[in-house]
Length: 240
Image (cartoon, rainbow, N blue to C red; front, side, top):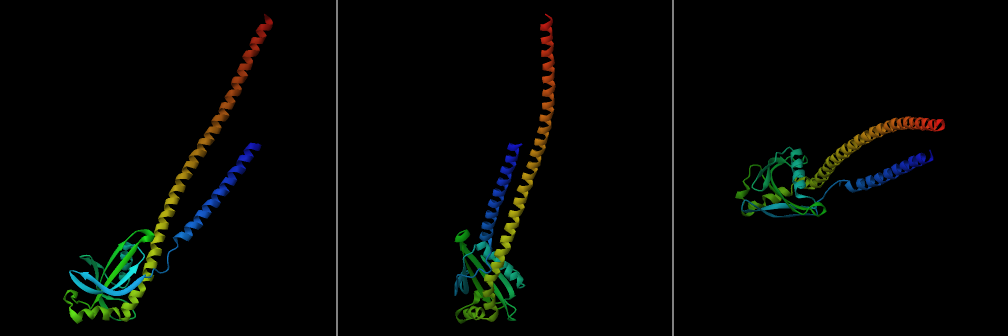
């Protein structure tokens, strides 16, 4: 019985060590996947961007965040403001968008996102052009190109620009939740698979125990028969 008890103690200690190890990994992963409350631009400035072979004034924001994720977050942001995003020749555009509830003004918004790098090295640049509803920005010339500057300085536009960082933070959190849900589902599938293997092994072990008991009984019978045969032999010798 002593070796058997020792094995039980060994197994319990192993389980405790495994649990502590998994707990340590879990805490490390938790600290590593916390989403940022806000992903603010590293730079924000007024500049220009080429749009259909014309040079257009634009508000430019730079982020340390992947290009595709910035695009997705901006689309979500615009849709929350009631806009519908369409694309045309490398730009996204939204017609008659109310940029913020702090101002009852509407603008046509054109934007595009460029980027490079992956992971922690990802960098993205957002170019935003603002125009009056229905304005053909290709016809802008001279002083009329100042239309963007005036729009960009409006209360609604400033609030819209300032809200992009928070929107990216919310997008980042939602993205990590989805990724973590997938990780949980994968871990659950693995656990289910391992549990099935455990059940299979336990059944196999139970069958093996039964087989051993059967074999032990058979061994006793064979030993009894052998002993009887030897006894018969001894009796014959004595008679002779």
